[in-house]
Image (tube, rainbow, N blue to C red; front, side):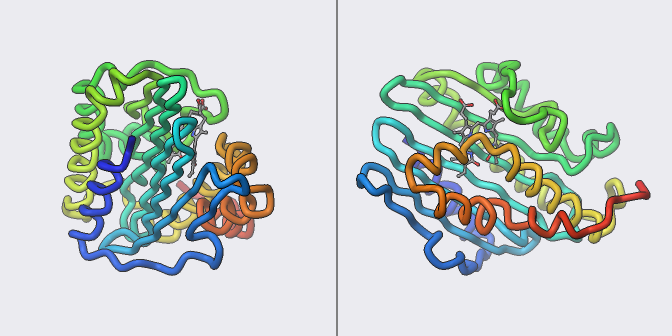
Length: 244
Ligand code: BLA
């Protein structure tokens, strides 16, 4: 279902001069014991983006997933790019989340970095429903204008392909802007916030049970802490922030 999106994403990442990074041994790929599902993972570094991970899960009719997060270099305070697309074929159910995940929720930060996403949100109303979050807190590392849809084939085949392309173009536009303006976050603070994003996400990720059921607890625990959210372990050893 999402292979054209994966190709588009990888094409653009590579066109930006990406270098592939090593993935911890055994986490590049995993097949379920029954052989009914397989996950593939990729990891990239590119100018201005220190870590871009991409995952594709293929469990046939039962589930297809494309999940990706881009972590900008720490001298850039722009939001992370977050993609989580799920297709439950048997039930014809789509869960689609596309967001520029903000490091801060201050009005200045949001106004500076999220204008493009806000326009996108208005452009694709059928992907911008006011869905309720069950496991995450919407005011932590999600933007007010995320595209979040629990829908079906109509959205998956209708507006999602165009929204996905526009979303990527919009992130590149943000990425290519001159860096001097903004909220003036130091590289240390950006690093702390990105690590806190990982710690928070590792704690809340609703997918851990799903990974465990497909690939076992041992592999899934390693996947969560060593591939999906490796900064989470560093977040615990840094002192709490005191200054804005
Ligand atoms: C929800 N994401 C989900 C769910 C699963 C995944 C199984 C629950 C489905 C549901 O709510 O119906 C799947 N999450 C994954 C997979 C990976 C993962 C396969 O991390 C890793 C390979 N999630 C993200 C990113 C965003 C995100 C980057 O990983 C942001 C764009 C959002 N996923 C997100 C949200 C929900 C979700 C907002 C709904 C959760 C809720 O209701 O609180």
